[in-house]
Each structure stands twice: as structure tokens, then as C-alpha cells.
Amino acid sequence: MVNIEIVKPKIWNFKVVGGQDAWKEVVYSARMSGVPEVVKDKDVFKMLVENDYGSALEHIIIKFDLKMSKGNAPEFLEHRIVSHSGFSTRYIKVDEGIEKQKPMYEVILPLHLLSVSQLQEIVGNDKLLKGGVDAAINRYQTLLDRKIPREIARYVLPFAQAVGIYHVTINLRSLLNFLSLRLCVRASPEMRCLASQLYFLLLGRLPEIQGLVGCRGFMKGVCPESGVTGVRTGLQHWFYPVCPFKNRKTAICIPTKKEMRKGLSLKEFDKDMAMIVQEKLFMQWARWE
Ligand SMILES: Cc1cc2nc3c(=O)[nH]c(=O)nc-3n(C[C@H](O)[C@H](O)[C@H](O)COP(=O)(O)OP(=O)(O)OC[C@H]3O[C@@H](n4cnc5c(N)ncnc54)[C@H](O)[C@@H]3O)c2cc1C
Image 1 (cartoon, rainbow, N blue to C red):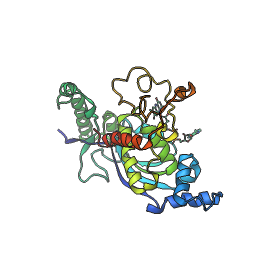
Image 2 (cartoon, helix red, strand yellow; image 1 turned 60 degrees about the vertical axis):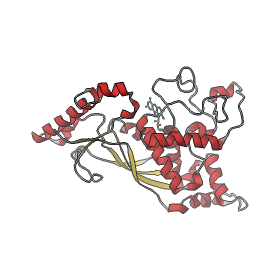
Image 3 (cartoon, protein in one colour; image 1 turned 180 degrees about the horizontal axis):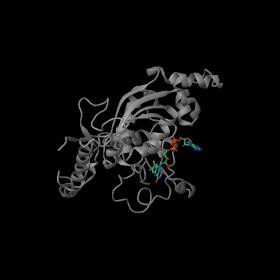
Image 4 (spheres, rainbow, N blue to C red; image 1 turned 30 degrees about the horizontal axis):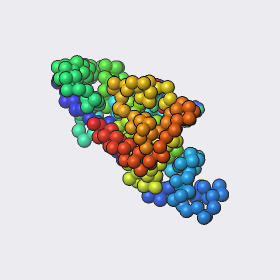
């Protein structure tokens, strides 16, 4: 039997090129376009993010490494305006890699989303979920022991294998687009976990962006998820988190486009409260809880 460890989706080596002053280049580019000196630097930066004058944000370059399940990695790769270099299961045995201290088979399983009874039913070593994953990885090792090439043996590996590993370079415009789509209750758990980690890392390195980042609804003031049953309308989807912005009676309600067009009357939006509420959720998602 091989050693298999359950790990979380992870972001590491996060850096903003140009450091704490990187945002000033956005201001510089805005001044080039004629924004007058009477508008203070920080207000210029804020205006460019809030008003979605996105091209100026492309001057800020962000780099990080990420680890997720191989099965969910295509969701990350759907974001095309990103440069990435990935872990090769053809050239590297999947228990190895430059990010590991010692060889170890790693898998990502969202066990925290299961109820206690579901966990008891499917997660024990000999049981459906974990047992199936373990069996697949053991077969991979057996195939390699029998001198089958890695590029053939890898076909038995499970969706959960944590080899969706990438070195990433992305500009701020594209990162904000990524966050706005993936900090949403409708995004998949792994993508929410990665996006939430990126959210806190970005705020830590670029505090000027505080209050300007969140789901598409938070960023634009209106949510495009109009006809999505169980999230914004109809019965709550049994497995999705509740959207914190959908209750019309609260001061943090963000209308969908459809509701807006119907002339929905709302309380004045409490942005500070909305930030507190969303960050509580992001904290939970980032911790993979
Ligand atoms: C909740 C959720 C559910 C999803 N469900 C599905 C699904 O069921 N099936 C599925 O396939 N995908 C799904 N996606 C993925 C989604 O459709 C996008 O592919 C993904 O989020 C990448 O977004 P993007 O295109 O904005 O990003 P990027 O690819 O980084 O592009 C950034 C922006 O550049 C522009 N752009 C990029 N390429 C082009 C182009 N070729 N032509 C014109 N403009 C371009 C667009 O303005 C785009 O917004 C889902 C995403 C979310 C968040």
C-alpha cells in the first residue's frame, strides 16, 4: 500500500510585481490619459477599479503557484487571460514534484461538505470514496512497478489527484475577473477555496484595493445570475451555500439584472456590512471548511 495524504487546494509564492507601490503604475497610466492632479492618487486607483477602466489595471502583474485536483484543473484553465506552466504527469511521477518535501501521493477531497452519516458511509479506507481513490493510486504504483511508462500508467489516476499544479502569471484586470466569477456561491468548492485565498493575499499585498473586490454582484452592484434556480431565485439549491446578498429585506441585498429591470425598490446598500459578511464566507472557503 502506498502513502496517500488528503490535502487542501492551496496558493503559495504569491507576489505582486513592484510590491506595495505596484498600484502607482495604474495611477501613472491614468495620468497619461489625462486624469488631473486634483484627483488624489489613491482615488484615481479606486476610480479605475470601480468604474471598470480595466486596461490600466493590466500594468499590475501578479504571480503565484497553485495546487488543486487534476479533475477540477480545467475550470482554472478556462480562464484564458492567464499564463500558466503546469505539472507534467508524463515527466514526473505523481508522488514527486519540486513543491514536495518528500515523495507523497496527495489527493483533494471536499469531505467537509458531507454530512456525518455520509462520511461514515463513504469515506473510510475501505469505503466507496476514499477506498476508490486509494485503489486507483495503488494501481498506478503497481503499473509503474511493472515498468509501464508514466504516460500510460497515469490513465488510472483519480479526479482527486492533487496534481493540478501551476505556476501562474496574471494581470490585475484578469485576476479581478477571476475573483468576481469564483467568489460566487455558484462556483465549485475548489475554485471558491482558491479564489478566497487569492482574495486575502491580494488585499494583504495591495491594501488600496480593499472594498473593491468580491463577486460580480458586489463589484458591479448588480448580479448577472438572473434565472439561476436555487441560488438567486426559487428554492435554495440543497448543496450550494446561501448567497449572502439575495435577501431583499436586508441592506446588503444585491439585485439580479432581472430584479433591477422590474424596478425592485431596495434599502440603501451598506457596503461595509456587505464586506464583513462576504469576508466571513471567504474565510470559511479559504480554510476549506
Ligand atoms: C459559476 C460558474 C459556472 C460555470 N459553468 C460553466 C459550464 O457549465 N461550462 C463551461 O464550459 N464553463 C463554465 N464556466 C466557465 C465560464 O464560462 C468561463 O469560461 C470562465 O469563468 C472564464 O471566464 P472568462 O471567459 O471571463 O475569463 P478569461 O478567459 O480569462 O477571459 C477574460 C475576458 O476576456 C474576454 N475574452 C476572452 N476570450 C475571449 C474570446 N475568445 N472572445 C471574446 N472575448 C474574450 C472576455 O471579456 C472575458 O471575460 C462557469 C463559470 C462559473 C463562475
